[in-house]
Amino acid sequence: MNKSRRKRIISSMALCAVSLTTLMSTGCGKSSDDKYTVAVITKQNISFWEDVKDGAEKAGDELKVKILYNEGSDNPYPVGDNDFSTQIEYIDYAIKEGVDAIVIAPNDTEKLNDAFARASDKGIKIININSRASFGGVKSCISSSDMDGGAVAARHAAAAVLGDASIRNGIASLKAAREVTPEVIKSSIKKLGKGTVGIIGHTAATADQRINGFKTQSVTEIAYQMGKDGLDTSKLGLSQQDTAALFQNFFVEGKRCGAVDEACEEAKRLISENPSMICFFATNTNTTLGVCKAIEELGLKDKIYVIGFNADSAELDYLKTSVLDGTVVQNPYNMGYFGVSYAVRAIEDTGVPYVLDTGVTYVTADDLDKDYVKLLLNPEDF
Image (tube, rainbow, N blue to C red):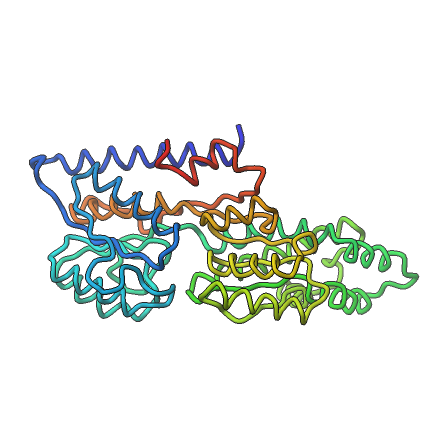
């Protein structure tokens, strides 16, 4: 059975198991008319968060929970992934409404903590989704691993980078040299990969781990392939840290971007300054759309391999036209569903895991007709 399909089936079974457990716990000593109220607070207005909302509302329907979705501000959504002020308005409104729990994707690790403390003082349970705040009273965090997401992207990016003729020819010329000393290899690697991979991260803290995972796994993949080609970097006598530093010239990071057009302009700048670039990694929906827009406008879809994050409808359109070569897809529906399910368990003090990893799946255009991807992208249709 396809590994990704098996992973989705297991995830679905787990979801059903949690649903059953939660339903059983809610039925113990309580009438069927009892209801909780849970505030669900998300980030910007993109389809990812609509999928979270769908999952939260599904759990709400099953568990007889009233959902307050992004209520309590003139803004129906935060204006970006670092807009914590609007989220504080939502939290204060939830406190005023006397909710039983708050399920939130925090836009900052620290700046929401005072608002969380006000809610916790009222007995309101706090569940995080997508990312975790530093507040000690957070009962659970339901998210994918950002490090793993970056690593998944790297495994596919490495295949594109290492298949490039300039990299292959460079390795071949090094092997053919009469005297290949460690110093020659070190200096050659730095020149060989200079400006090969562009990276544009978003402004939230999750970008740091995605980029870290991407770089770490990329170095592993590139060094492994070079070893297969006869250039074993493990024989250079370098520490793991120094080996990683040897490959840093491969990566060119742009400034962090919150909006599509901002990411587009930053991508164009990186491309113009690094003519040897053959791969791009973007860490969320807006940066992915910005990079794709730049690649399309510059006519470089056949030259630069683009890997993005998430599966907004516009991202899928770029996937179908081969501007976007692949994207790391999370499971926002399950984040919303488990967020509300775990909120009920926290309210009833039946225990919740500190962390739930909802996983990531790498999706290309060839995968869009596969059942497990259809289920992942459109769970409400199944």
